[in-house]
Image 1 (cartoon, rainbow, N blue to C red):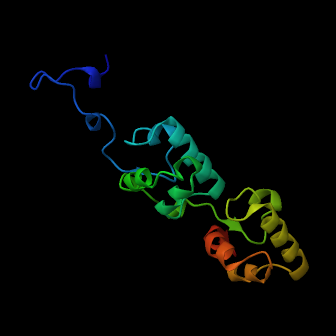
Image 2: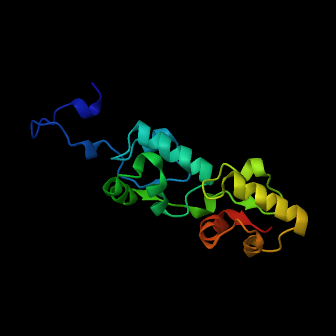
Image 3: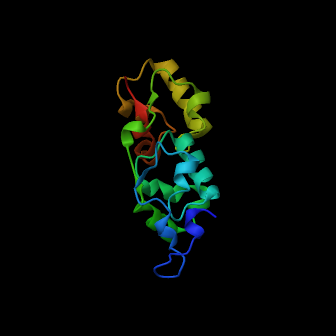
Length: 157
């Protein structure tokens, strides 16, 4: 049997799960499913869903975004619990270059969608390169809400 199935001879009982689950915090933007399932509270389905959403986003900017993961949407207590076991490195977040992305690249992003992505590409073609991220506000489909969520995933470089 693996180590965690053996009885502790001193106490004659099985060790608690936390004795074999990871005690170290796991960085969510670089972890694979194997690393995520080591975290107490994350099983294979949660790990796959978290990574799928992270990849669509380009990375998490806030642990609050875990509430947007489909499988976790109706589980605020699970999200609160997970936030204490995860770390976040925002330097690992992928940013879309404003003057180079295609609608096909930006369209799958949860905060953009195909309509906004196509509109931004058309706006760029009509008005020329974006000078700052804030310039996307000139596009009629970029509402204040869309801008607040999407802007951190864009770069004007």
